[in-house]
Image (cartoon, rainbow, N blue to C red):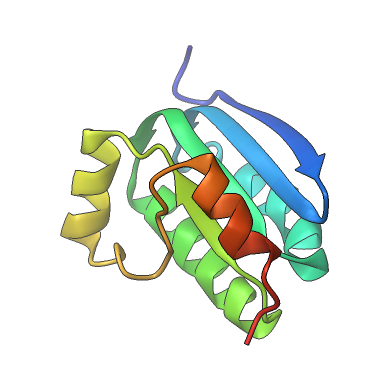
Length: 118
């Protein structure tokens, strides 16, 4: 998979959209990443499964920060699942690890996402 590739799969379970990403979130793909999430985020909570994300660059971090702002403005949640150790390290170094909830598994994520936003 090349640097400019990001595959996006999704499914809707009840009122929650679950997105599964594969590839990189970087300057080539960050706009497509955001574009895929804007409308669903306006409709409710979303879960992002990042298990198959190999790399998040500084542009990817900026996209995630923008996603956190959109989440706050839309009063909806963004939950992250299956972060690799390298992605966790990037989050920690960028100081954004507390911007998102990172539940232990999909079942917990679904319970949190299904609750009304306060």
